[in-house]
Image (cartoon, rainbow, N blue to C red; front, side, top):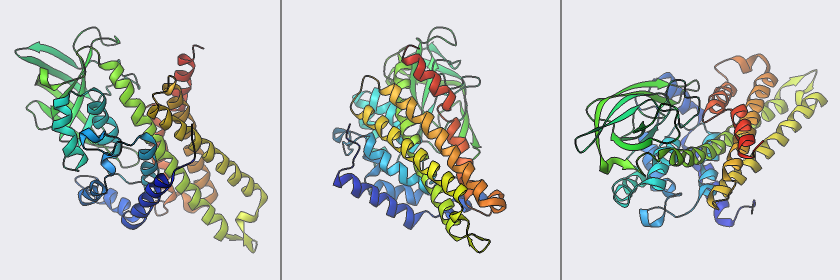
Length: 380
């Protein structure tokens, strides 16, 4: 694997960094949270992101995209993570969009992806349910046979950006019992369809989610994504891609938290000298630097493994999520502690990273889950 960046990748990363610096200070994030914004993100900024072509990074040129890969998208998401940007890249590109990219028919890709890439369409993936705990196979939502299709009944939890999505990709059981691996099918459902009820939620870090209920929602054969009863494998692939994207965002967040902490160590004076001159704090800062660099390597390796269709891509993903979960929590916890009392106040920005670290750690599986998954994949 080639871990170094090409000139084009450096340019992409620098462009994303400049965009975040110029358009999204934490004052904007604070205002979105405190003002209970209807969308929870900026639609004009979303259109600007689309205009830069970043929504098409992972999609094939035949679908209107740039034909690049997860490594390039991870570079953009890393910079977005530094600014804690709430724009729905994860939900639209790497959850809903990836489901259409990997499992959609030619007609579905033609109908959905160009407008998604152009910034006019938002998608979300409705896959989690009560007590499912990261298991894509635990699906109680049912799709029962009806005239010319199916009827969906059930409830999905923590649907990221579900309140603004134009369409939902929904997992439902077309056969088998609630925990069976086989018998899961994915469907495209319009959020405004009859029988769909969306209740907005906010996560710990102020990000957007929703509870979505389905009461006899009609879907047809043309709405099936992938194959009937074969949705579990597609969901695994989609969640792995989204997990790597989240890891890149987490990497940016831990870097920003570390930067805030270093600035404080260099400027806060005690006993007439900067507290960063104290050896104990130097050691802790050095340990943070090491953990962040290890997380960076794991994240990039996972992105490249997906791009190369590596036989052990799933293992790379779990290693990345476990390392990024631990490293982000460490960077955020140490940041708050080394800031002292001010780090515990809402007025200081370091607390935003602690909340995001905790929320991201629990999304798509925490460190313990992914260590167990890695062990199982390796046959331990």
